[in-house]
Amino acid sequence: MIQTSFRTHDVFNQSPPFEDVDLFACDRPLTEAVAANGGEAASDELSGFGRHWGSAAMAARGRLANENPPKPRIFDARGHRRDEVEFHPAYHELMAHSAYAGLHNSTWTAAGKPAGGAAEVVRAAKFYMAAQVETGHLCPITMTRAAVAALAGQPDVLAKVMPVVGTRSYDPSFASWWSKRGMTLGMGMTEKQGGTDVRTNQTRAVRDGDAYRITGHKWFMSAPMCDAFLVLAQADGGLTCFFMPRFRPDGSVNAIHLQRLKDKLGNRSNASAEVEFVEAHAERVGEEGKGIRTIIQMVQLTRQDCAIASAGLMRSGLAHALHHARHRSVFQKHLVDQPLMQAVLSDMALHVEASVALVMRLCRAFDEAPEDAKAAAWMRLLTPAVKYWVCKSAPGFLYEAMECLGGNGYVEEGILARHYREAPVNAIWEGSGNVMCLDVLRALAREPEAAVAVLEDFVADTKGLPGSAEAVTFLADTFRRPDGERAARQAVETLAQLAAVAALNRTAPEQAALFAATRLGASHGRMFGTAGLSAAQSRDLLERALPQVAHGLVRIADQSAGHEFI
Image (cartoon, rainbow, N blue to C red; front, side):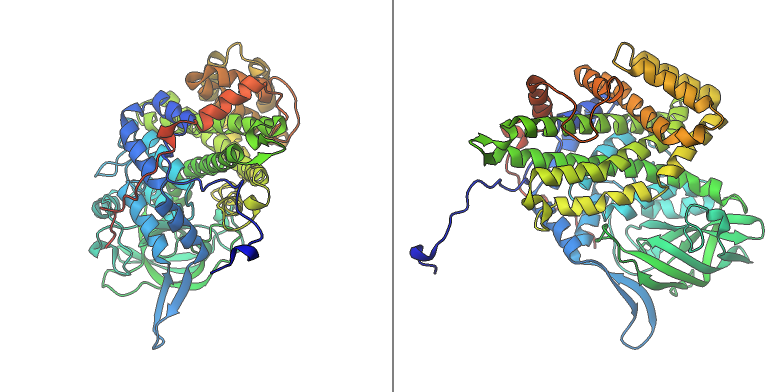
């Protein structure tokens, strides 16, 4: 026991942990964006999810999963190849909770068709909240959900796997997918000689009856403990998509040999591997030679999740920074009441508000696309633009959030250092910034009339808002230029911001006007805190971001019951 005379200080003027909160109810921009895009009926469900994922227990799971990264177990004690990856129990618990909430399958029917309604919006709201707690485990969750879209190109394979994908159980056992209570799906496209340029793939596929034997390598294959993967390989007819399970039909382990796990900047809880295929068993998905067209259906959905997760990371950064500033005192004032800090935080809040409005609008387009041609065009044109702007915003945003906490933001005991390391992966994965810009240009070239219709909607939805007319003129002029690729980054950023203004104008017109004025209508500094918001505007934005009312900060219990995975 320490004697009083030896005590050198008391701990005070420190913010309490930001946990045991309802991540949905205390996020007014999210609740409004969900309601505006058709998901209001799910408010109770989302609030229950928000309370659960906002609990101290879930925060601890996220921390433990990252402090104890996965380990390769390539051989057993007697020298037999196993090619397994061992995860900390906290990782499996996170996977179980996400599966229980349907993050991997709730946008599909039991037959693998789009669920319709507001399924994409509701699922995105959950994904956005889960990303605020732990994003690494969401990689296999994302790929499992997205793989269904590609498997639609091979109905017989889809019909076999959907009964297992369609459950809300998580089964981490190393066993054949058809014997399990639930399964996850991954993918492997990238090879050493070409990341984005998958047409240079050298992995070969040789027909073997109704199946194929695949030999080659993958430089990045994320979540290598998934039960099956969609991979690209060169068949006689050209680059083709294949379904490659971890176990062969006879029950033996498939020849998917792990070489090593990547030592990554972030995404530490999730394993990413280099692998070799040695005549690995696989089934074709789609036509031979149509591999890119087949797997792009999956990629479109994973890009959507990159944007949702990045928006969630920024939301978490804002919430932790604002929570800290409300509790921390400096120079005889709470930090949040200092004019400079208030300017920074409110500018950040405005950015997050626009980002969440935009990603939820994108998800509504995904919901409507199967039945609405204009929504489908909106989705094809805006998905790469939204991914570009939202994902590339996140690293700088999270640095600013860390700075709001000072040294406390920089140490590993807090969550912001992990968020900061995590942020770049969403901009890099599934197409870097330049690839997204080129995809926007391709969408414009393929569907010029549809693109014009989308821009006309933006004109109507942003009429009278500062800078919107000029932004539309700039986009029209730039996209018509023969050397438009050189200006594509500025054009795509402007397109995304214009779409954000339009989306925000449907949920919060006052904030839409502010965002338009500060992003489209006037030039200002590149750092947060330079938007010139008034004190009243700042207070309103911060209250919307994290209301200072009891319902958003009530203590809640861990709701683990029903989330078991074995």
